Image (cartoon, rainbow, N blue to C red):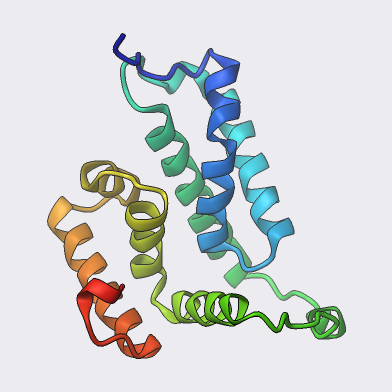
Length: 170
């Protein structure tokens, strides 16, 4: 039986996308709390604009686009605001795990965070969330060729930073 396109009026379809929205939000936000706030704001905006969702289109792409635009709007607004000092003490209270996989995971996360935002965004969308190039292009508001180019450059930078020589190893 062919899977029908997700519909914004189907609450189950929206709930199923929350983990993907949270993962995508982490590409923009370093703190989990900020990512959760971004997901909440995205869902609130989507509900407020139900009339703008076109049936037959991909709900996931529509929600990702709303999230990206929300983040960009927030970033522009926050660049004009002066915020207090970060709570640095709370960031230093974590204990690093000793397992090698945890260390490698941290290295990959740090390397991802060093990527330019537009490269990191494409890596998360295409590699980690499995979005098609066409959908990633629609979400990012750029041509498919740009998505492929950004992904290629991001992979090269990650391989270089992580010391991975072979493309097959990545």
